[in-house]
Image (cartoon, rainbow over all chains, first blue to last red):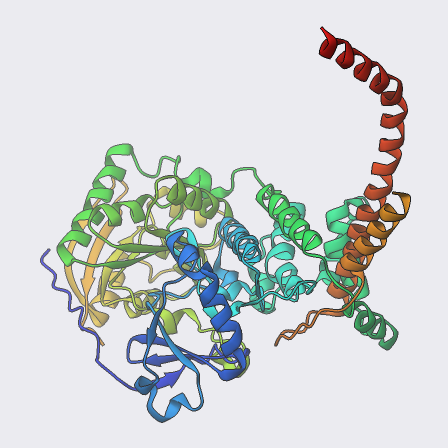
Length: 477
Length: 83
């Protein structure tokens, strides 16, 4: 199993604006080859200077809460610099994930980071111009804030202008799961600006509305948001008032302790949480499989690995033990993702578990359908793992086997795919209540499909039921 | 003394919710959020004013109770001084 990995990326020095960075005229992100540059426009320069002088930025970077920055010469941008006042460079983030791909725990951790940043900023008379969840990314399961330009000078008495956005993009999606047990992902994906207060409020049973926090942040905000002109006049009049700092801090810290205490309402074990304990794999077989994965990763020298169908992360951990620097795990089961997230946090793993329905991955969406990139456009892993997955897609979802193989081999230039035969108890279970229309579902046909797309490097039977792991490798495109 | 406390109460009320602060942002804060925050600001102002009056009420009773003892204490201390 000797695989070679070419890590050199095409050195393109082309300058292109990041399509997701256009809302704040105070600056924007450019890609310069593989480098990430940020302009600061004159309209934001005074605030930028104030925040630089406040000492807040190095403190937050030091605490791992904010992405690092270095000052660069504007000459780097050439004519594209326009009348920009400053140019910053940030480290590149390998994989951008969206809040509708985050499990509950990730959204919760991101919300707490947003509030902690705010509380630290206010101490130095710095505020934030927005509160969007897209400003947060994950290193493993540790959230990191990535938008330096959100920090602005705080003027005493200012309102929290990002309060509505915070509620829509953090609080309301979390409440959806903690009150109703409904994961936020599908709704959030269909509505990338988040879940509106009026919408959530309309669903709440009466007794839930009497809690002061729900009443003010959800019910009242929702009912007062209605755009009748009389209300708008009231709001304009209200916005002339001062929002005292003491009330601001109280609002932020109240939200912080509330959000920290939220738990999913559906805590009973889901199918896949139990799966790990089921007997489709005996302990020795699971051990052999883990060793196989570690060996594959160490032989192929893959640094970034995608584990599709990661469950609670057993094989993601095996990939890390094999030398992977980062593993992104995908699963559609919320209970398994919660456990995977807790595990990555307690064991400090470079493992990020995300929500994915393999048959319906995140699309290109938002403005111009390029603001939030779909999964395919972000697929840059060195290796992909698809263990105990294809029968769920090919039989559970009727996707033709060649389609599953094509999708997986497109994800990365190499990987491990497990073939689960029809005789396996899990497949028998899948077919228990339905007609077997899958005459093509066989190891022979799977091998044929795989060989059309890639070279089979090695294969190994890893269970008494005949499950087999196939290592594939294809040309890097 | 009473006059000074009243001045403090008015100052607190004005300072907490009284006048506008410049706020420029690219984001629409939303009418709902602004109205909710002004309610919270009003509550913070009311709490601040009430706490001043509460201090007055508390001070009144404390003084009431303290007054005779104060006399005693000063008498004792005089005794001590004399001892």
